[in-house]
Image (spheres, rainbow over the protein chains, first blue to last red):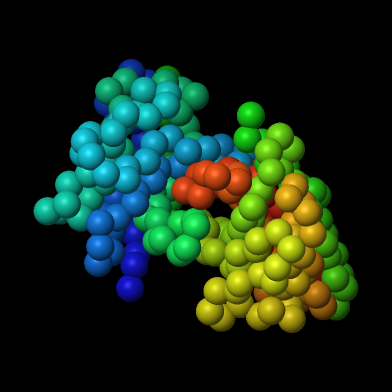
Length: 115
Length: 116
């Protein structure tokens, strides 16, 4: 069965520090992978996605993620965190179903940023 | 662009009553809309998928008669929680996929349902 694991429930970093959020997936075929950010009162926003090609994916807000098939991982990184990055981050795998992807989400990682 | 709204943002109701939640795509036509449920400190779980003009497809374990979904137009889907009970209290989130962009889902801000 498909699943997504985000091992870190909470992460706290200082503003300006680098960030890495971990994501591991279980899926039998080549995965479609996504990272979303959820801020209070707002809908989930897509940060980046991987479908194929270059395994290092650039996203919005300075985020990037690297797909590593050998490790079944799709970790999210940012070289310098801003206070506005404090939010909940979700990794998801997309399972093709006809004309759309069924998204299977991880439990999320809550990021706190200290000044 | 690609904005999805939900109404209401919060609702409190008495046990046994029904509650309707609306999901609207404001600036695009959505061929497919999705309804998710999010428990505290947990991930989003897909409840059902709806295509405009056809019956919704429910995920395993989701009661069709409890969670009624209507996708009457390309910009509106509704979720009705019938005969709500305290265990239905949750955060309900919808998303919409534009026509011709099957891999992109745009999410609404969610609706917090509390059943007393």
